[in-house]
Length: 312
Picture 1 (cartoon, rainbow, N blue to C red):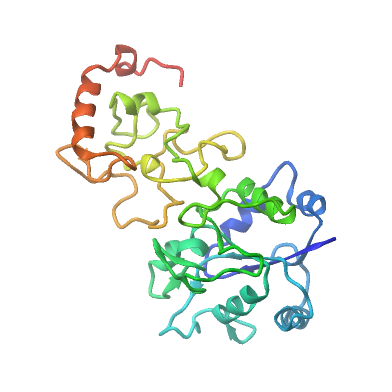
Picture 2 (cartoon, one colour):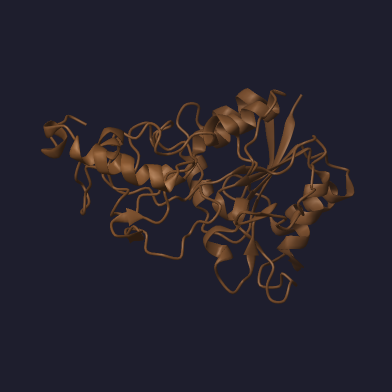
C-alpha cells in the first residue's frame, strides 16, 4: 500500500531539498520506490501546473486525498503583523496552508533548522517561526500541544541543512511503522541524542586543552575558534557528510546549526570567554570543577599532542 507525501517549501533557501537530492545509497527515487511512498508533490520532482497543484491541495484539505507524511522545509513566515502575507502561495498566506495540511497529515516532519526552530529566517523582520518551536520555546505555528493524526508531535530534523540520511531514516521509520523516539526538542533520539563533540577526532586535544587559534590545525577549536560541538546535539560526527567528512574533521569549527538557538548573536568563529575560559561550557559540566580539571589537564598534556604529532 502506498504512503503519500507532500513537501512544502516555506521561508528558506531550499538547502534541505538540495541535501535530500544528494542522498546516494539508495538515491531519493530508489528510496521512495523501496518504501512505497507516493510523492504527491515535491517542488523539484513534480511537474504539475498551477491549476493541477491547486486542485491537489483542495483534495488534501477536503480529505478526498489522504496524506500520510507532510514535510515542511523553511520557516513559517508570520509577518507582517501575524498575517503571513509576506509569503503567499496560490493567493493564500502559506502559514494557513501549513495549518490546513498539518491537520490532515498522519505525520508532520520539519526538515531543517528553519522549519524546526525558525533558524536564520526567524532572526529577521519577516517573523519566521518553526512548526512547533520558536528557538527553544515550544509553541511555534502549530502550538505546543499539537499531535498529528499518527500520534506524534512535529518530528524535527534540524540542521542547516538537515542531513539527508537522517531524513531518509525517519521516512523509513514512518513508512515501516517503526516507533520513533524523540528528544526534548522533538528530534529523533538515535541521531540527536549525542553531541557533535562525541566522535570528533579532536577529542584528545580537547581533553588536554591543546588549543588552536587558526583554521586547519589539528588541535581543539572550542576554546578560541567558536566551536559549538560540545554544546550541540547532532549527528555530524556519527553520519559523515558525503560519507567522508565533517566540519571539525576538516579543521572548521562546528557552527551549532542543529541547536534551537542557531544562528547565535555572536561571531561564528570566536569563542566568548572570560580570562580564556569559554562562557558556555560543555553540556552538563560544572564550571568550578571544569576550571580545575582543565588547568591540570593542560599541564599534563602529552608532548606529542603539544607538537600536534598525531595522525588524526
